[in-house]
Image (cartoon, rainbow, N blue to C red; front, side, top):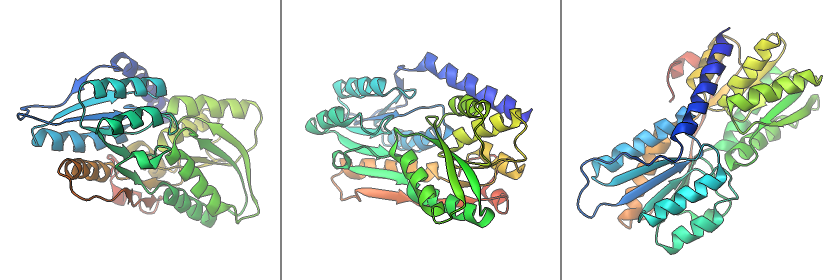
Length: 317
């Protein structure tokens, strides 16, 4: 049971993260005198996407002789606020933040602005974009559109389940892009929206619950591929993989394996290394008083069985 083992591994890894939540990870070596302090707070570190993104940033900060500290919120919005406040008390100069809940950070980001902290929002927007000096994300709406357009080449009729993460603007945009693309087809019906927080260990039991309730569906769109992995595992466990198609966003190594093995139909590639590199560049432009773009959208690419091997099965882009 390939998927069962994969999901079990992901769940164990997710659980292990809670042991480390709140630890003060400091990546800095050989700090220069009068070094800057760059802080990072991501929504979770159980997603390889953020680890790759973070590696680009921390490597640049170390190379510059500055200090870098990382916080893992483990999807807890209250904890994220507390951790940002703690980094502010330590004299943070730049904050890189991926909000757990895009509406929750306004007050603490207003404080950061008053204290002269530069703010870079990564991967998904905050509610008040004016609080960010720069927002750098994948083109999330376009990602949903690309999947939807491909979906229409495969389906004329469908009973769709949509796996969502409503607390994030990226999740909202991907779902909306997909829906906008497929709404023109009259034979497509949305039978259930399921909030899964973009997590494997939530998506799997939530879909199993819908199956047990007798929800009839033949296609699933997932806001990300952590959700896709959970969905495929639930379908496999219920003997439904041959009758239900799965579409996602991320093109993680796990999902590319599923696409290659014809257990998943398509995903859209994000490029975390490029996003991290752009953030690292913007950090030092801000510190040097240089002009920057306020909003940066990193392009995305559709991955299907026809081109999956071109992207490298065993790695992120």
